[in-house]
Image (cartoon, rainbow, N blue to C red; front, side, top):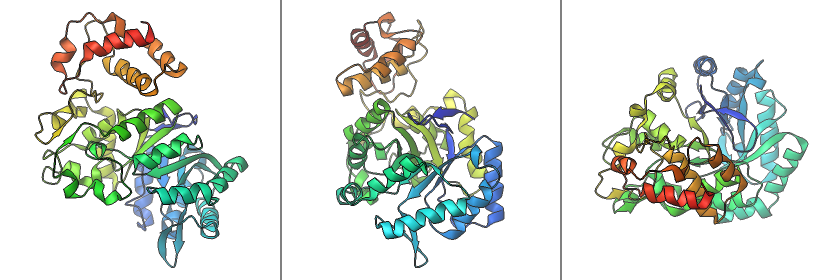
Length: 382
């Protein structure tokens, strides 16, 4: 297993993590078999948004006697009312649901208390002005939530949340087709056919800004919807008209700035193995650029996607990393200490570029890499 730091929280999480979408009301024996297998493979990061008692009890059974082995991301504001799930900001409902969650999990704290599902301005206003965020901050002060997170599909709202300084972890929908879409309060547009009927070019500027903002602020991202609900795995259903493999989808997400882990929704061990295959996949198997290049209506032109096709550099420059740190600085209009430190720790720097052009000849997206290397030397002084 590969582990990454979850932003600036200090938590070390498995890159392949477990979502709960397909575990809702699963038979306990089946659920525990998948959980035991995941633990055996090194998975230590779990997301639980479900509010129904059966799912919560199943998770509690899986955690029994080994709570400290897990980083638990539990959702705050997900309630069970009249035998149905309800997203709520009503503290008279949210508070007992939170207590119920801890009781059923058999724990007295959540590693990440994830403010559940906020995509609209009105909802964000209610969270920040109606006492909900204040309550989460109180829970953090008490140690019942170690870190506060937010789940969202809308980059506009996610940016507002991160900029408050209170959000330490962001659960966000990430994949190549969603990344081309503008932010919207209607999440249905992310997978609506009409959203892909015209031409789309490059990563949406707000989504790019969000990832770079999270990286610069030390906010860890854990990904949902990495497969686009499964559509990206089908040539017929993929907006690109080409099918990704699960490994390619995961690698795309894990090469975005600030991404620490992917919450994989799996039905069984076979699907978990499809995700775990990323760990042992070759660079060729991970390479997603072939799916994204040469498209008619959808183009990623002139913008680095950190796919790694530029390698190897004859003088050893890690071109993708140099470009990432450069982009982070350009986005902020300054050179933060963190980015400078990361850049300086690289074995080779932009100023060492000999201008051979080998990287540009291999780049599927027409990035002006040699210019980027020159710019990096100017920005960082080496």
